[in-house]
Image (tube, rainbow, N blue to C red; front, side, top):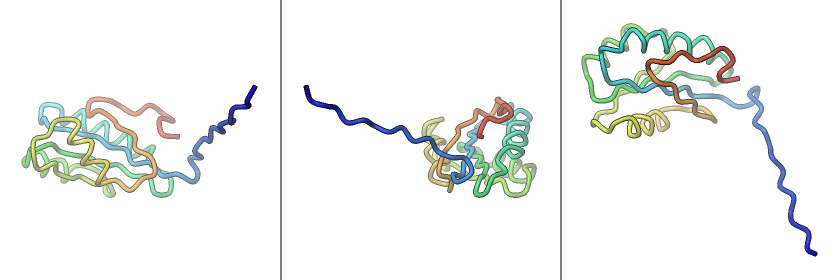
Length: 116
């Protein structure tokens, strides 16, 4: 009987890992929900290196409006080609600097402790 290797599961320690919260949006009709989602994520992304990245998918007027209304420190980036949710998420991953990525829909509120 041969022995199988034991794999060790390592858990990441939030005190040493940063998180990029990526929120993708494309429609002005959900703007109020987006701004609420950004506010909730900003409150929780308070660890060293944590950040909130908002990706606006192919909507220049929304891009300008969101940049004018989000808290300081939130990065708002354009997804210049209409690529849908997957393309926007990939854009957010590229723009983010965190060790981990947390995706949040533009109509969702991050629950307390959601990135701890």
